[in-house]
Length: 334
Ligand code: ADE
Image (cartoon, rainbow, N blue to C red; front, side, top):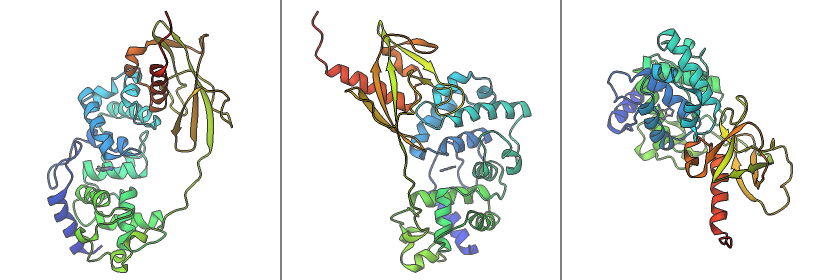
């Protein structure tokens, strides 16, 4: 990238940077590594808009790494409920304890990468934003900006990272990384890039081509298999029987309705209440079936306090669908 374009990128960032609760303003001292790390983990699979209120609630509850390291696992998983990808929360706890025992975050991307839940992108992002290392953090937004700048239709990851290494070496790494993130999120949009307001348009080859949106070429979509499962609604005295899922695997460690293992290949017959939910590797249709006998180890959760159970989104949907269906039933005759 030309030196002029890097300068224009940084000037644009000074004017237009998004104010986000884990950031410090352009040109100022870096933010607390704890907040940078937490935000990067939350942002791994979740949008900025969805993360902002959850981040604020989380740091109000656990303001420091030490506080989080001392927290109870179930409390943290409960606070994570609704954010999805619960392996992130389990790794978050493991990482907090490891780093607290080390006396603080290591400062290099190579050392950060050794920690639970921290991969190539996240280690680079934390090292650049919190410690100023010229680390090539490439997320989807940044990959799109770079692919367009050099008009790469089928970019190879290593090639994009090499180009990013050169860019971050040309100035303050944390500001450059975040400036490119903002550009990807607000200007260099996937379908409708706003090139007339882009600080990089002078050197941008995709802009010069007249069809910037064609870079990078879209990848063929994977088809998601459809699976079917059953959840049991076991109720007594206005309380619902909940269980905790096994520590490993999908929704590991989270509160749940008891049920089968979702290996069904066809919808269960009958007129049960059903909800649909999309996971990364498959789509699930879950039938909610009332049942009298208990299933698994669990606890009685009062129905008017279900919001405190830390249920992930799938089960929140199931509960909401059941309560909604009930509210439409005619009251039973006394
Ligand atoms: N996405 C991932 N990390 C981010 C950050 N630090 N700021 C904005 N969006 C992001």
